[in-house]
Length: 143
Image (tube, rainbow, N blue to C red; front, side, top):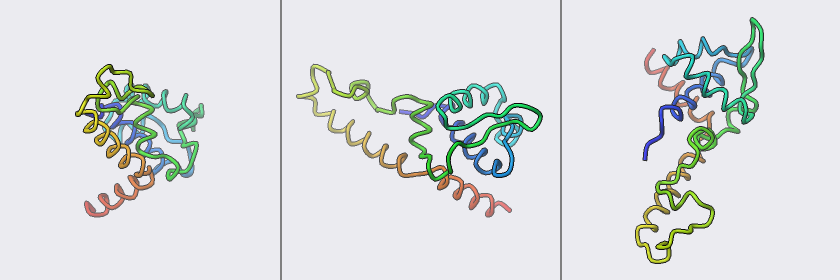
């Protein structure tokens, strides 16, 4: 199970907007330069975030993107699930009710459930503000 490039970039994009958009909207062009990601790729990702109400766009020369909520109100999980869809480790766990004909006698289902619970526990308990704090600490060590 891997988080896609889109998912990883979505987290970086949201962090960048949070870190640089306190006073004015953040332009995709500036995010692309700082994050070393293609503008076109970021435009695809921000479009999904915008439609979901995670960010708000503003047009014009001073236009760009802002977060719709405070960074502590976003979890890594909410961002990843929006971009990635399901993060279930196996297909039979994608459904609300497992309709796999083997689910009642599948010993490995226990493993997949534990793995899924552990992953959700991590990503739902790390906020965007936690990631920003980690980034600032890393930036300070580098200086």
